[in-house]
Length: 286
Image (cartoon, rainbow, N blue to C red; front, side, top):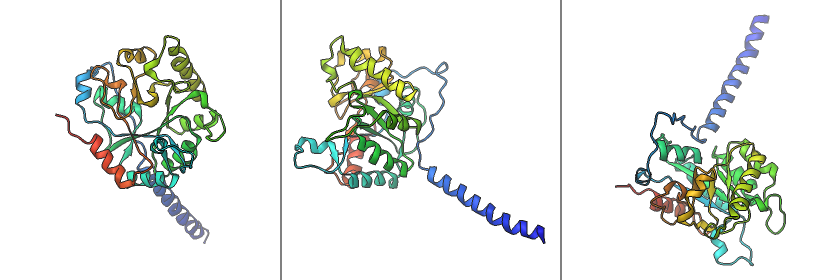
């Protein structure tokens, strides 16, 4: 009798455990593809020509995830997307079979020909806005996605008409497997950098973000998407593996430091975004 009772208790428990594991696996299924380990001592890095010949990976850029205000300019509308619309767009990406990757995976693909999942995409956020954590990160989590957060360090912890992420929120993003990257100290135009700016706009923010996250900061996004070709080489000297612009053409000499992104404007429908991604990135290189 006791043996029978043990069986009747254990079987449902085992079934419940199996169902729980099954659900966990299903939830994790669309998550970021794991970074392929590359033995760089046995592989020769691709040159600029080979990198430019590769098929581009779509990279999306977001700024503020909030509803428009009457005081917002027409120009600002491109950088603002309503929370409901953002959620629709991310759902469309998941439903369309996209898999988010992170900069390390993109770098290994471009430089060492590492494999990527089917329909890879990078979702990036600029300027440290807290809505990127509250709405952006929560939405990405729902679909097992990860993102890249380009942090402007002057804004960390600031509150006001626009609130910005705290150190604790940035640390949480890093701990959860997202990439934290640099976006200068106070959004100074990269093309206007002086010698002193390499410390105040590049090195100091890198140190601060490394102290917050406990991880190396190796990626950068240009404020306004603007770069200066003659100083691109200095980003490598200051420890960056790659850098991201906006929709202009990549530099022929330094393609790793001019990786293209497109903004997902607030006026787009999910269908508009899908067509924009395909038009901008899914061109076969000759």
